[in-house]
Image (tube, rainbow, N blue to C red; front, side, top):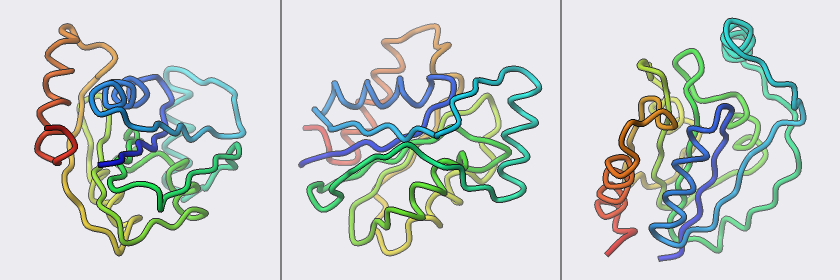
Length: 162
């Protein structure tokens, strides 16, 4: 099964999950990057990110070309911002319609994912969802092997891993 991972990562959590998936199933990995490269931290990050979600902002993105039709399974990953997928996902999926595919989704959060996975599914109508999973503070995992085992078990459930 040819697998693609398409993700956005602000603090490295989603990127870490994408790389573990890549290693487990030899997936092609595509990172969504915003044109705004200014790094924010602490309260400024939460205020800025929350504002973008509430105001339904769709930030400009760096160019990214993905031939969706080349893949059997597409795994989409995002951090959770104000209980929703990061706005970069809204931008990407608005410009890159994905339909008729097997889709799995994941999100990374700091303890509250809200309705992020349901909102992400709503951005991907016309697809078959094969699974979903969330990760709390993935990059701060005290046991990287436990995280890898969790991801590999999920991939096996998806049929992406033998």
